[in-house]
Image 1 (tube, rainbow, N blue to C red):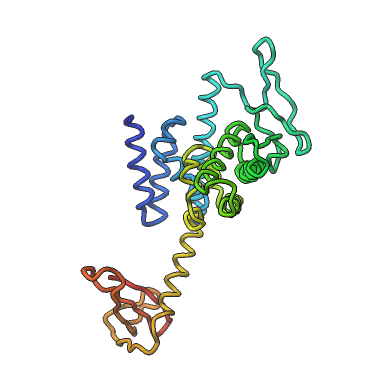
Image 2 (cartoon, rainbow, N blue to C red):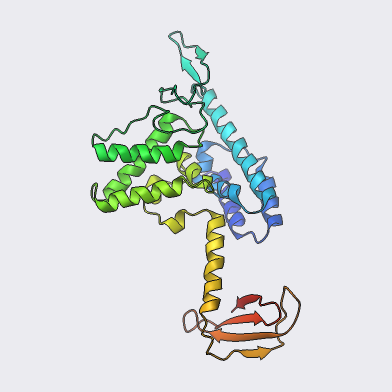
Amino acid sequence: MSDAVVELKKTVKQLQSAVNDQELLAILNTLKAKTVTETILRESRIGLAVGKLRTYSSKPVSDLAKDIVKHWKTAVEKAKLKAGGAPAGATPTTNGAADKKPAASASTPITPTGSIPNVSTRSSKTDGVKGKTGDTTRDKCVELIYDALACDSSGTIERISDKAHAVEKCVWTNMGGTTSDYKSKIRSLFVNLKDKSNPGLRTSIVEGLLSPEKFSKMTSGEMASEERKAADKKIKEENFFKSLSAAEKQAETDAFQCSRCKQRKCIYRQQQTRSADEPMTTFVTCTVCQNKWKFS
């Protein structure tokens, strides 16, 4: 493992443990000047970590994350061109030169597997992609996954097609054939991939940061965007507070100060929410502004 990968793996952990926007911005700013390759991005998983922040609730953080991802994608594509790959939109001629073609419209797909169609919304139909499994049901599912992965991607047809086929094959293997569970899982993956608020999920698969094997086994909760996960967690905590029995007496105290209204008029109760050898969790409610919090 290279030093660059080791260093970026540490940065991934820093991003995951950051407690506020300022920390995230500071870490992201250090990444702007980093020189990366496709191998480094894949092995360190830094691309996936930064990609998730493109949907972060703070606009400065999400904008900076988008800029970094765009910069890295451009660098990787340039490296591929230097290594002998053909640029997007160019078709090799018989003498080895590349002639640029006009941008394709949605009704005129470009079929070479290394090309990137210039369309606003890509799909298997516009890209001229067909399933290659030999089974009608499986081929349709491959095309469905392709539609979800390609809808806003700048990846090549070949890459997205390979990922779509790999995802479908994993689901087919996991479910033991084209069973009802197979079809249900494909639908679930499709719905989550098409979520407009979760572009990081699509990107992580197309760029190879999330393997088809792992993705094929993920639940809807695991596939959700970070923003959605945070919202679900908040709802869960609120429901937990509401579920506390009103019949159980809650003690009044002035030992706690509300962070919202700064008053010390609170009621609290304690409950064992974890294992017996762990401390009890204290649930506090401000009687002035109804703010709720917990600690253990």
